[in-house]
Length: 225
Image (cartoon, rainbow, N blue to C red):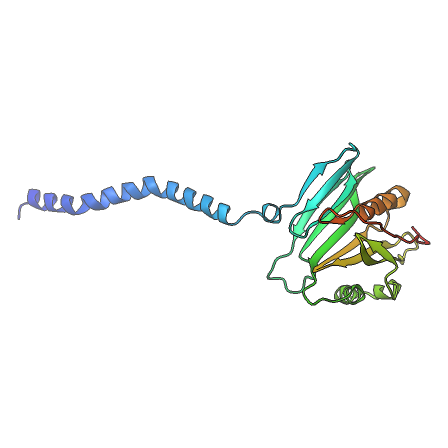
């Protein structure tokens, strides 16, 4: 076999490999881009999946937050900020499914007004049970400050409304907890609300609705707010 014949034979073998390599180099980036886009479409971000949104009201100073999945809404000051966090399903130790943090403007930017924890009441437990479970998970003795029986009504449901004193002698955490069908709502305020912040928290609780149904609420006064 001459050198020329050998070269021709090698060329016939290598040409398909070369063409395939060129095709892979050209096509692969487009394929990976398309695959990534399909994956993003099939795995939306938690915010898109949950569908929580805010909207304007007739009062420019008030906005409305709606959670379609759990069927509730509430109003909050338009100069406040809201952010959402969702529980990782693999974290079995976490009690809540999602949390909504409300912030209010302060001298050094936004600070926390309250955090609203939401989860499914799959076991059909009462609000006293959930207070005890929540305190146990946190390793707190805060449960002793909760009323032994419901002392409020929020969104048309029996509720607990109380305050956990601070060890530092300043305002403690204000807590509200109630259930609606299979949903548990646990609201916990910042330690240092002040009069304006406390009133904003009360307005959030008073405006709370399930499925758009307006209700008459009862919130008892607290000795230390």
